[in-house]
Length: 453
Image (cartoon, rainbow, N blue to C red; front, side, top):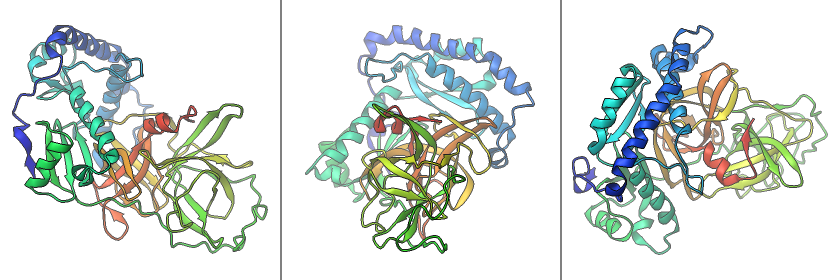
């Protein structure tokens, strides 16, 4: 692995910092004070209320102390973001003193502050808040400049036709904890690194390494149903629909070219879209790459979705393979959609889980597989350039589209996203090599006012 230009120690000038230094310093101080002041009462509530039952999966994996600390951290993060301004496009504006935030191994919140401004902000925080609720760390680069660079490369690389340097990139990771951006090169040597810096982007926070390869989606295509009501030419009226329910993590089945029902992926989370002239449509979000090699193509608008018993449970209304790899399936008449996971956790709001946050995958091959968010990630997944995040849960072929969520309490669970792909052999991905697309991006790019419900 090679670090370019000493990015861990070299100072990097922040654009416009001189003009906004004093103002932004005050703004961030005020926002941090407001954030912690707002949540001071809920923090005590969480510590003393026995009715808050933490997820057994997270507690058993990370410990009850982690679960408790993480619940407090979520309150702080939520309050912090609620007080951030936004530009006319709706994009959140962060002060240049802010370097990012993440959850550490103890479940505590760590706030990163740019070195030049650490002392003034840290002093304010230490005098106003209890030390165990927040940790502060200094970094060289601001969250704004790293995010701007990541977003630029995320757009430029997949669209740079004829650019040899861009074509050599398998993926990019926005590593907030390390305050760096990691670039995965298919061919890794000094010449390829120099070419990237010349033709794509050059900055002291870039780190290059040899790519582990392109992650695979892993649709399960060979498993056929042996059910009496399923024939080569399936008739939807064979089985009654009144008692059919679709749950997060349930398997998705498609009809192949010969009419046989084959297992393909998993359902994600229940949601609604509001389409002009049609009103609210209830359905589920899943992956858009399902069906490859089974139907001879990936799913598209109008395709029918079936469950394990051969019931027609929904029809694809929207499918986006570019960037987000997500599809919306409108539930068929008589089919109920559940917002309860396999272990009975109630899914609700979209939760933008920070780096280090515990998440759980529910897919068709297993329930309750916990892990943590490692980094924001964008790259090739075999069907195009996809944006999302890396995580440490394990997955198996067929889990694509399955729900990725963060357990908070019995009735308050954040929808984080859906599983997309991973690296691994024999259909498995080990810890750290799973990828999911974020639910907040589904909401932005699928459009039509998509909301979990």
